[in-house]
Image 1 (cartoon, rainbow, N blue to C red):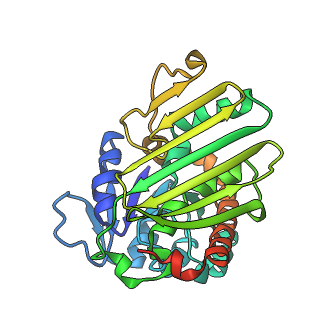
Image 2: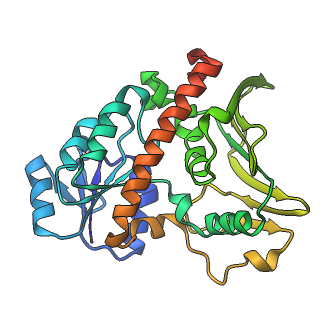
Length: 310
């Protein structure tokens, strides 16, 4: 496997690169207009021709696109014509680019994979096991708090895609897709209390499961998922987590959800067998459509001025 970063900011450097090192990946490339000093000793690519040559020379090339949404459509269109796999960081798109990205992915020679690392972790398996073993009316509650971000980032551009709502609320998308909850059945609420600004996404009167997501800006970083069925429950903190530190898992039946070994999401996602990428590509297309509809409904229900609250 050959890996190549498209863009190389702090997230790529501090979160993803160490995972590739742990996976004993030898050849790691970077294609970036701003990354120059190369203190990490990576292999630098300077032209699109070099990107294409890389996919011709190697059978399994995996591009990790870490540029923010709104700054990557042109390079994604080019990569989609190559024999490769593309790991795309969340959020997958913004509303303005959705139609173009939908066209690119459906006609793509490359396979797109959504970079939701927590979906590939032990805690997601625990959650799925709980839902499957407790068939009936479940409740799901997610609380996500994050400190105020400095405006001295790409968020200075002040677009819908560059704010907390897109950057954090999109974590709900895989859960909504996997639980088959229609976007039209969701309601939205914006509140501001004690210097904390929050958006809630919740469903009502679902046949099998009701969900409630709360995303707050201004608190101490944490995220917790709790699912209940009758007297049974499972609580996972943190749930949206792809790194090696094992989350705390509590349940009414702890034996059923114990794991002999913990597998973190980043390692599992990035080392997926190439044969599985076709299935992941179709999942990406479905998730892209859901994510776009989720944010359209969010803006329609609470107003664009509140969606842009950072």
